[in-house]
Length: 371
Figure 1 (spheres, rainbow, N blue to C red):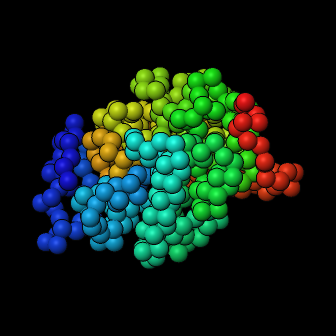
Figure 2 (tube, rainbow, N blue to C red):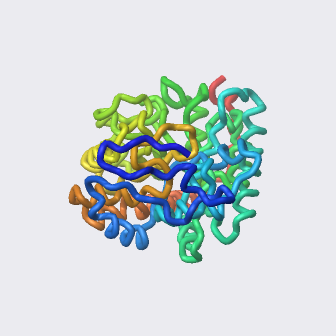
């Protein structure tokens, strides 16, 4: 495993030479020096009480590419394993089920089902470290038992196959987040009538809408329509870096007003090449959307390049230390790492119970609504 050099004085980053003789990863990875690291111990103490709920992990897809892996002891071919999560103060992960380029049509549905099955098999194989979570209460239960909670999703909207019945099936199998991109009913023109019915059914089931990468019109209509908070599982501030998945200030303000959550990614492409750049985006989102609408998204094991000093899940204390140096209050950091995600999950559960009292499963089809 290689790493870029930080722009501040460091010693050697974790690499192949740091692995144990059997190729596993040591339980206490090295933290780089630099501005903010005087607060590292304070950051670790804070994360012990308020662990990170990471909004986007590509671990299932990364594991499927490997002939063999070792999550419990550590694995240098991954950005995420149990020792790194423990060192980084990670308490919950959203496991992305987005598909690589290629599958189309009905194959998208079956490929998503295969990914769900594989993800559950990984969780089942690591009962001492991982626990599936469908609700906010189950996330807390996992943490209280010393496990990392795993929430399945986001998956791509194409996985529905334009069928609300398949949405219900995916929900039954554990899917809890769906990204509203890549379909005709959630595109540049916004949501079609069928797209609106998908959002209503997601609200009824308790499936959260992920709007990262969605067209601005889709974001606006979903914010107006959804009775549950929405997520942007990997979006930073477009005012600081003009990436298409980042949000402009007007949408950040709308997201905050609607009680949604912008989860800032740890990718050099979206946030910049240093810890300071990521912190700048977190500052900006907090200032525009509000401290209750900003969260963290590692986007580890997705193939993305990460900022120097934030190259795997063990490095969250480094980021929290930088925020402490900037004057973030403990209450704001608690919201950032854990409490905002808990709020969104709780409100989604409440919205689902309320909707289920008002209506049953929708029988509408895309042909009936969109012609």
